[in-house]
Image (cartoon, rainbow, N blue to C red; front, top):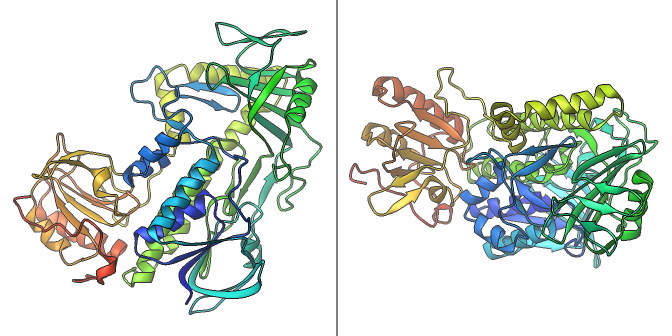
Amino acid sequence: MDADVIIVGAGPTGLMLANELRTAGVRPLLLERQQRLRETPRANGLGGRILELLHYRGMLADLHAASTDPHPVPRFPFGNVHLDFSGLADPPMRAVQIPQPRVERLLEERAGELGATIRRGHEVVGVRQDEEGVYVEVRCADGTYGATARYLVACDGSRSRVRDMVGIPFPGSTCSEVNRLGQVKPAEGAGWRDDGDLDVPGLGRLRAGFTRTDNGVVGFGWLTSEVLLISTTETTETTETTEDKGTTYDDDVPMTLAELQDSIRRVLGVDLPLREPLRLSRYQYQDRQAERYREGRVLLAGDAAHQFPATGVALNAGMLDAVNLAWKLAAEVHGWAPPGLLDTYHSERHAAGARTLLHTRAQAALRRGHDPAAEALRELFKELCGDEAPLRRIGTLVAGGDIRHPSPDADEHALTGAFAPDLALDTGHGASSVAELMQPARPVFLDLADRPELRTIVEGWAQVDIHRADTDDRPADALLIRPDAHVAWAAPVGASSDSLLPTLRRALTAWFGDPRTSEEPHHQPATGRVPATPTQ
């Protein structure tokens, strides 16, 4: 085999997958048809659960350092209604402003440091698979060659050639709106006001936020004191279908400032003087989800698996796909995966994608319509989100913070299946945190109540790192945490050993296979295995 896993597509999803696989001791080969990194940003930042996960991998500080605004005011559009979390001390949705090319560059540099093989200008033109592995035919400047691996992951976008070659349907619709987005400076003649609005010649006051006319929508807000983020939405004649992809508009042909200004003129009826574009892009929403994320040894992730009819979620969802999938592929490669583990990638991430489709479809419904009923719906939604409880509910939904994976046990702890909280820990040799323990991307058993009988059980699974620590207001006596930072099992505070030992064994076997008392040396984490002693 030329690699353990072939990854097709070197966008953020493919690069994140390569990072996770290398961290887990797996050999990925990443093939990308583009000769170089794209400079046109298809996304302007990261937000929600993926930021917590990147913190757990020790990567968030680098993203902050490369960000144009690492801590923006927590205000986010939801179907042309702005959600304002700035009044909350602990907003459920946060973001980091960083253009997608910078994210890709950081991920590619880290993947290279970890030893991942990345080939640019190499296009996959054929795929076949059998019980032993996957074979791909690759075209590059020097000709055509073949490569083999145990698995292949298609991260090659909404028009995924791999998905089509293995016959996975991608049903849904192409939305009728064409969207244009720019980061620009207002030129002389379009003055900004102290309240954040604009004075536009021939129009007067243009309020920050969204302005709707019979010809479309213009939205804007200030990224900095001098830079506008401005967008337009116009309806085309494209017909929505269930199977055909229809006519799509994207930024394969770079957008110009003149195109953005023409669109603004069509919507507002006047010119808006602009200059010095920092980012320009166009896109058309799609509402699609692959029927399945796995076909034998071929799996889908990112835009190849789902397309959402709203901004701000696709990049985050794709990178979370990669994190969920990587440790399960690593378990298969290293030989400790229990039966059916790889199938849980589809069941978990397809459900998460459906949840994201739910709120992005709701956003599409909110932004459409010009009649009084549509306006009333937007006003009522905006009024509801002025109250903290519904605002938090929507924010958690958009962030992906409400995802909870099913557990084999019916009598499960409230944390089971949820993202592990970043508890501050006292390990007896300096303060630590759950985030620090998760950096090696390995399973972790965290004993928070000095339960040696539980640690003794876990010692049978060498692939699980054992840690003993104390924390204030512990939510459980012990946590079994998957490499993707989701809780596989939790011990209620004070629960008896008789009730805990059978469920702990079931969880260990269900997620990490049969007991293993040793591992190959190169599969060990850099931090090593913590001995299960009561003194730690």
